[in-house]
Each structure stands twice: as structure tokens, then as C-alpha cells.
Image 1 (tube, rainbow, N blue to C red):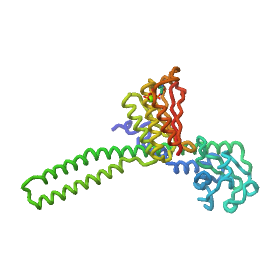
Image 2: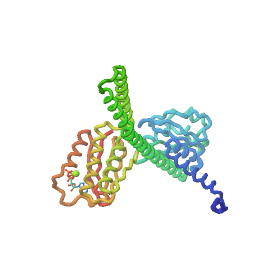
Image 3: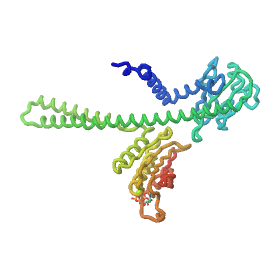
Image 4: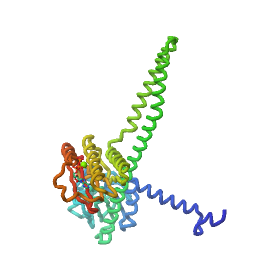
Length: 381
Ligand SMILES: Nc1ncnc2c1ncn2[C@@H]1O[C@H](COP(=O)(O)OP(=O)(O)OP(=O)(O)O)[C@@H](O)[C@H]1O
Ligand SMILES: [Mg+2]
């Protein structure tokens, strides 16, 4: 092999591969929420100039749990629970904006809850910023210095930026984890169907053959009894296989909605040749089956309508958690609802509205920026 074949820009090709591999590992690492948080947290001192950094992760809506400490001496505050309103982070949890103090120990508004921890760590100046996405609090980022000083605008701004990056990393991690869970379920389901078609069919044929043999006249009684036993075993094997296939193909609660929507999108694309993409924008809470069905039915009717009325080039179905429920939207880039559609015979949307209302949900139909229609179905979680 020539030298040029082994090297690019004078560097061995292996180096390039190692670099690529490192980049790839980094990207994969970021897809894990905790690793992403730890990585960003460890970069806070360099990015913002503070000495100590840590993160408060929400536990319910009224508490933070402190962790991911960088440059702390004692570890005393690791795992500490901060209630809403207490200390600096508890205040950020409520105010949802950055707050800071020049000297924690001499700020009367902070209270005494965490004074032993702060004193043990030798901390004075402290800053905390909310990690927010779409109004949802994903955590609180803290920074602290072991001397008293006023935080300047540059540090505050840098802090807000790191908090924004942390929010983005968490959202990406949530989305990719959900997508991976849906994909894993789809693979399990595919395997289940394959086993059903192959092993299931073979067991059935085997059972039928044994039964035919069992019914043969002139058979020795012992052989007949043995055949009856083998037939019984084959039936039990079929029942066990069915049970396992059922478990394999049933989607777990958290991914059931994503799976149902993906299936509707795939069927729509197959019928129409128009691309329908499914995006999960946040982690989704598990939904009661009736609510899940109402959302999936709404999406199916919206896709049917896009097929019948829209003349769309593409359709996007998205699902995301709202503060108190789950929203599914179906947007097409078609012609929009015709102006003379004030009175029509269609029942589809009315039926969907009814079904959603029965589980406490709502339906909205609006024109979108592409001139097409966006259907929004919501249910409480
Ligand atoms: N994506 C869309 N693009 C353009 N027009 C739409 C779209 N979705 C709905 N419409 C308009 O809204 C009307 C009402 O929709 P609806 O689903 O209630 O009834 P339908 O689809 O006409 O009939 P049915 O659903 O009972 O078969 C439709 O007739 C159509 O004119
Ligand atoms: Mg319809």
C-alpha cells in the first residue's frame, strides 16, 4: 500500500479514526441526561469563572436535590434536599430567574437553613440560575466563590448561557432516550411477529400431525397414550409462546403513545406516498389507556383528513408533555381549510372532539404558518 493510502494530510488514518471515535463517544455521552449534566457542570468554573459549581435536580415541584459538585472540599451538601423558598436555590425554584448574593452568610433574606453546609465549605458569594425549557424547570445551576464579591454582568450572563445549554442538553437527551425506547419496542415487536409466524406455525403443524397420528386406528394403547401426552405438551408450548409473544409485543406505558403515533404515520405514508414524520419533543408521562386511545384516534383522523382534504407535501406529528397533560399536534403543509367550509357533513372532527371531551381533553384546529392545518389534541395526564 502506498504511503498516501495510509495517511491523510500527513497524519496516520488511525488518528483520524480515533478522533472520530472520540467525537462519537462524546455525542453518545451527551445523549445520556446524567452524563450531559455532569459534563456541563464540570465546565462551569472554566466557562463562568466561579470556583465551585453544582446542580439542583427537581424532586417533584417543590424540592431540589443537590448533586454534580465540582471543586467542593467536603461533600457535605451532596444529596442535600432544598425545599422551595429555602436558601438561594429554593428561591430560584420559585422566582424562576437568576439570583445571587455577595455573601451568603451575611444576607438576611437567605435564612439559616444551610448555614452549616455553607460554612463548612468556606463559601461566601453564591449565584443560582434556573435551567428552564418551555416554562418547565429542569433544574437549578449553582456557582459559588470562597470570598465575598459582587457578581459582574459578564459572569451572570455566562451563567445564564450555561443554564440554557444544560436545558438544551437535557431536552435532547430526553428526546433521544424516548426515540431509542420506541425503536427498541418496535424491534421487540418485529421479533415477536417473526416468532409467531415461524415457531408458532411450526408448533401448530406439529400438534396437528400428532393429533392425526393419535386418531389412527390399530394403534398400540401405550403409543396412543404417549402421543396424547406429546399433544398436551405441544399445546402447552403454544400457550407459553403466545404468552411470551404478548409480553414482547405490548408496548410499555411510557412509549405506548409514541408507538401508536409512529404506526399511524407509517400507515399514512404507505397509503399516500406523502412523508409523515413523528417527533417526540419531551419525555411523555404514562397515560391511562382511554386517554392514550383518544389522542391516537385524534391523530389518525387528522392524518385521514390530511389525506382526503389537504393535498399536502408533508405532515409532521409531534407529541409533548404540557404542564398538566400531553399534547399531540398534526400539521400539514396543504391548502388549508376552504373558506366555504362553515357548514359540512363531516363527522370526523366532531367525533374526535367528543371522544377527547369524555376523558377531559380538548381539540383545536387552526391554520399554520405553511398555510396548512394544525390539529391539536390534548388530554390531562
Ligand atoms: N387537513 C385538512 N386540510 C384541509 N381541510 C381540512 C383538513 N382537515 C379538515 N378539513 C376540512 O374540515 C372538514 C371537516 O373535517 P371532518 O373530519 O370533520 O369531516 P370529513 O373529513 O369531511 O368527513 P368524515 O371525517 O366524516 O369522513 C373537512 O370536510 C375539510 O373540508
Ligand atoms: Mg374526516
